[in-house]
Length: 313
Image 1 (cartoon, rainbow, N blue to C red):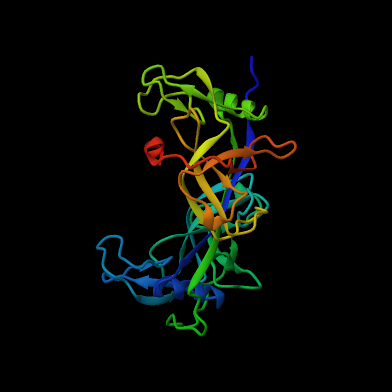
Image 2 (spheres, helix red, strand yellow):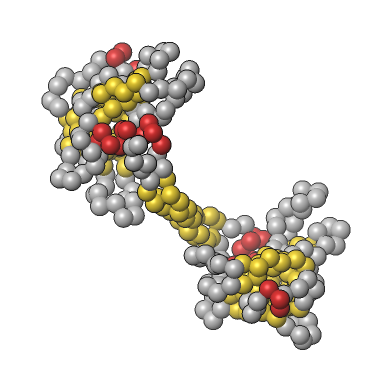
């Protein structure tokens, strides 16, 4: 039985967003150890604050301070904290209705065990020492048996307001390509490109998917294609990607390998970026030990006529 391929895969990028006046005040307040909510027309105080009433959709902007103490309304115990979570030891996820608020704020509760957590318990915010204006300025909640914390009287106006945040997004998972793409990957290790032909429409798909995306029928007939192909369309990349040792600008394009009915993507090299063009004939360039082409370079052949690849643009 052929080996089932699998490999760890990480998708990661920084998510940058600007803040409106409500979120700007909320995060700046956390930096100053102040928790702000927003008042609705019917008198409710929402924490975290939102820009629109979730019931009436009215604009909201009246900021009010709530206490840094509150009551747990519901909770769940986290036995195995994961990377990036607030605490690296087991803790409880809790919804806390802060004193003066009408909604719950989700955060972590540092507690010795699940037996020490219960709905209705009193807690308070534990602040981090160095705050920047982010939800992580609240390190966690901790058990508390005192009176409601005093408020500063803030109206939501601060010096040097936080106007934007950068939140890293990351997804870790194990990818298994399945039968069709495993065959494609194994062929690449021999410096060959193989696709699969649809038994109905007779199109050859590279990389193969195990089924024809047009007809919806299974595919199994392997067909070797390329190695040369035609550049159908492309873009010039001017922003350097993290952990990618390629100098910008460079060209990334869709390449229709000879004999294939689907264009795959790859980097174009061996030619100045401003001389790359649609219809350019290209061939793969391999590096020692590489399991896939490092890039594609011009073959020196005349450019392909547009009519020969227009369906693959």
